[in-house]
Length: 87
Image 1 (cartoon, helix red, strand yellow):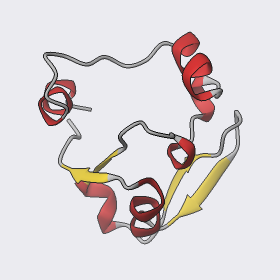
Image 2 (cartoon, rainbow, N blue to C red):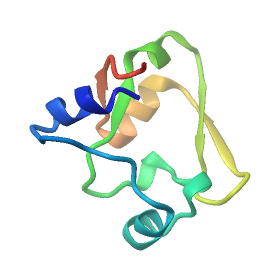
Image 3 (cartoon, rainbow, N blue to C red):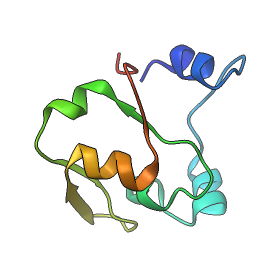
Image 4 (cartoon, one colour):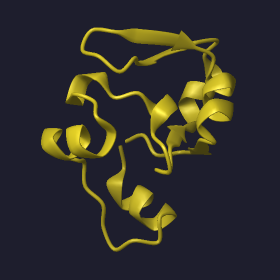
């Protein structure tokens, strides 16, 4: 992920990936089980490239649990902002 581009989209000087502890405290999820569906008031960014696939796999809230979903449904459920953020 292009963190500089994400920072610009958020009008921030810089952004960084959250630590495992921050994820657990903020979202209640382990680092490998984060689900964008219940990100609450956090902004969700979706890379433009995923929109070309019929379905994608996202974290299901627990380690080893994944949800298969269409990118359009994911965008709708999360109010996700589609941007070119992949490196």
